[in-house]
Amino acid sequence: RNRRGFHFKNFAHVFKNEVVLMAELLLICAVLAFIELDTTYLGQVLISRPTVAGSIIGLLSGNFFLGLQLGIFTELIYLDFMPIGGVVPPSGAISCGVAVIMAQFFKVDIYFAFFVGIIGGLAFSFAEKELRRLRARILPQQEKALKENKTTAACVLFQSLLLQFLAVYAFLLVCVSVIGPVFGGISAKIPEHLHMAFKFSYFVVPWIGLAG
View: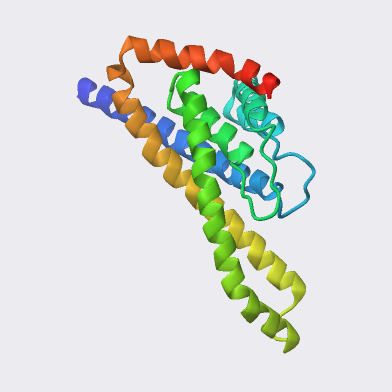
């Protein structure tokens, strides 16, 4: 009985920790999705800059300096990306946010987490293009509804922001729920020379960014 009771308490403790961890991850993804709105859709008060976004996500996840470092490195990489015309640059907020999540929640080495974040930011730029195409298709319907007084400008704006928030949130959940466990499963099998290569590349990043 004592052993069974001990195992049950152990299981309950682990289960509780997992639930808390999952709740924190969901909250952080929601905050990151809201921060991403600042890029072009709402506010534009620069909280979506990688240095700021990384610091916020790092603070919320319990490691401010990890978020700050990844944010600065991401900022240096993305300094030359300009959203001119129809160009959709990689999302710095998504990149550093995914990197912090990978490093803090899934215990991925920081030099791997950084490049996973960069890939996440690049992937989101393609998703963003599809979102803009979707908006272009529904825009005539919204204009017609506005002219016929079937809706208001505030309602249209809210729907647009909600769509963007939910799309970013879904992207983040898919990203971290797929990449995190997969990377965690293969990390022990990554050869040492790849660790050295990625570590060297990571510490070269600031010099590449400053040179740009």
